[in-house]
Length: 357
Image 1 (tube, helix red, strand yellow):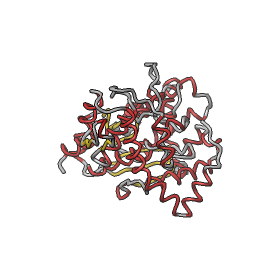
Image 2: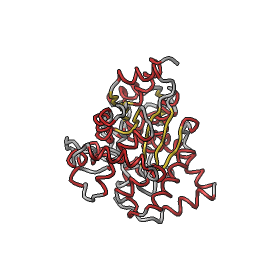
Image 3: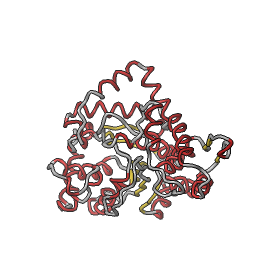
Image 4: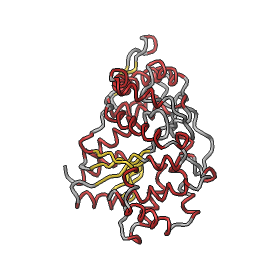
């Protein structure tokens, strides 16, 4: 695959790329660039944006020759007071998340899982953290609070000031050419680009993927923190679909979802069709009675967008179809945790833990 073809594939992942010119140059000069992705073990379950969508994005970039370093950000979650501030519980949740990815189709040949708990034992890591902190103001660090799923005013504990400094240092410690995270992580990635050259490092290319919506109605606000309000969140369990949800749970949640007729923008059911269903199944079949037009086979998102925007597909028909395909996507994970006794015990254990925002 030539550099231009790799670039086109990665552009499918990046809602925003900083910068496209730098990415293309990187692909022309390095056969296997290193991408960093980090995840905070912060709840007792993992939703489809973290599970399925993350796997789809990583697989596309792996196909383009990118090697991934996935950081289990256990100490970051501890600094952010997740799981009641219990580091051992956080680490078990991290192990659970890795097992989910092993069973949902992630290209593990090109993924290396690493732990912050190992990095913190190295003096060179803390030297990088200190370099970031020394070259940033408190206000600048607080403004990156979005990366922790928090508005600026919600950054309260001193430990939360450490989090962005550590995440910025992670990029350089892992020798990442690319940061591949959600749009909500943009601020710290830009900080890394600003600081990198002055600290003797480099400017990482930022590939920010789209944040999958929750099932609720979009907020009316247009403020800078809207990205937090829109995204699927474990803290709003009835508007998120989890990788171990039953078929009944999926149907119930989607049946109540925000899905206005003829509206295709900021419609979660349209989003799941675009970013998950057509990516995994390459097709969406609408089952309906003959009096309502009969069954309909749709082969791409643009066709769905046109038909739904014209009112030729009823919201309930779309909901039924999306429920079916999302269930098919999560079923292998749920079945693995049901059949494997070790995985079943792991899931039962973490579900007893305290969850804190």
